[in-house]
Image (cartoon, rainbow, N blue to C red; front, top):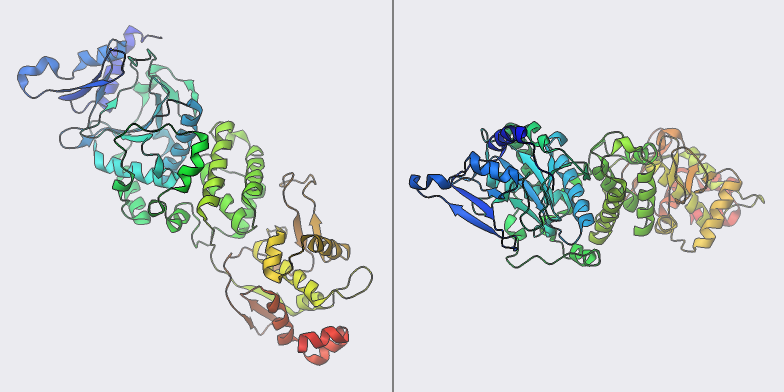
Length: 530
């Protein structure tokens, strides 16, 4: 057990008084009887002055002779707040949840430089934010922020193992000292790498979070979510059950829907009806990757929703796609250790698919030109034979999917399930063969998933490109479907419903029976005019 150098003790005492010790008449003292339990000392009158929590007790704490904790004062004010992670059975799991909460704290608006971490002395960790003894906040405000953070992180069901401290009745063990049960020193840790301990003097360098900034953060969160009913997430009085990886799926399935609203989730992750969050944006992130630190968790959530909704990926495919995307990112754009980031990605994907979250982007009209319709109508296979009307609806569906989801290069993902929904064709093998025929005659391009291309990843679904699409129609559009098609005066139609019948309706709208008889075999012309 390392000891603090004597010459550093005055600076550490000063830091404790500046950052933590506001209430000197009530404090915790850890017992040395092998239980690790705490005694609460309450000083009720001035005659008990020797028992007041003064610098001599701080000196004992720093030296490891005693271990103390502090409370919010009688008015409810506190100069700090802790997220207390209690995962004694698994340090790995503790780290995983710490990193998830840390990124949620950043998402909520707290700058990363104001987030600190210390070891609990056992197998837990504290995530710490300091307001300072000169500018404390009421613990209920800090506690409200704690609940918002768990809400954003999707961890409202973890309040029994990720606890808030301090309140007027629940104290917080101070860092730097020694855990009397384990004998471990409660050192500060690198906030972005919990396996890296820091020198005790790190504590003296901590800057306080401006309370005005904290108030602004709370105001924005309340505007977004309203008041979160904290009583629904109250910590159980019985000892917390150890949570194992095997238990996790059951726990997530029981997550309280009222505390993790689908609508609000989309808002906090920037997934509401906002023109900045278009198909082009998500495709660009998929191909170009992360651009700034502190955004990995948010962007991963965005992409998981996008892959599920826009590409129709199943859980396993989405997870594999995101893990390969994650491992392709430069290490300087995210701070979470890769093994923990991988676990967080898997948790995000599981959460989204388990709870049925979907992505809705801003509505945008799609247009199709007469020239594009004519290409589809007259399309022939390599033997010079016209594609059937049913096959042409597949080509039309691919065209419209490209307009909705393609990136600037014109490429897009499309699953067989999405083709089935748009056309009614359910035979996967036939669809695959048909797309190959389209590629053979130059209607589409199939970019193989095992090709080595900049900005693409191995083992993903094939990427397609419709070669006859008018460039101005390629997409930064919506995932919303509407119900009609209306003609415009410039030879195009606005399309808001993509089904097998849509293509037929557009053909009937733009081509006369005489024109169809000139372009098509007799039976096909009759099928479109019937």
